Length: 213
Image (cartoon, rainbow, N blue to C red; front, side, top):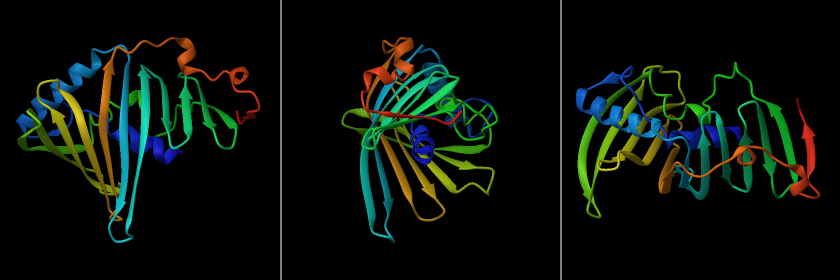
């Protein structure tokens, strides 16, 4: 689930001025970053497709992400990952089990709370082109990590020019595997409260609680 969470986060990512690249791409991404930072919370419904042509694998799933600062709730593939900023609950519906962990501040992995700032450094980016799709102008950008030890070598971002929102992200791994995330619906300032980002076992009778803290 940690791997799914990490990859899922990439579709919602944006950049700011610290990254390297051409001015047009920089201006576009600064606009996207500013737009997302203005939201107190957000909800995104997305599809996730894993493809590996050599292995003849193609799988598609759908997911939902609720986000408010360091708090998040991610649902995908029959699992939910819920975090209030201090504690993380991983609920596996089919197994009827929830695992509880403390948030590790030293974890270098991508955190949902950082989804709009994770590219502030470590990437070279460039503007590719603009295309009209269903009457809307979409801007295509390409990002390359400066750290060549990363397991991926390229990310393609598609951004809606008018709304300054990310439409699609494609992550290319060195193994030949490709991950495509497409935003199906996006709601800024989505209504959330404290209970949104906690797991109340009383509401899930029969669920085994495994406390790993």
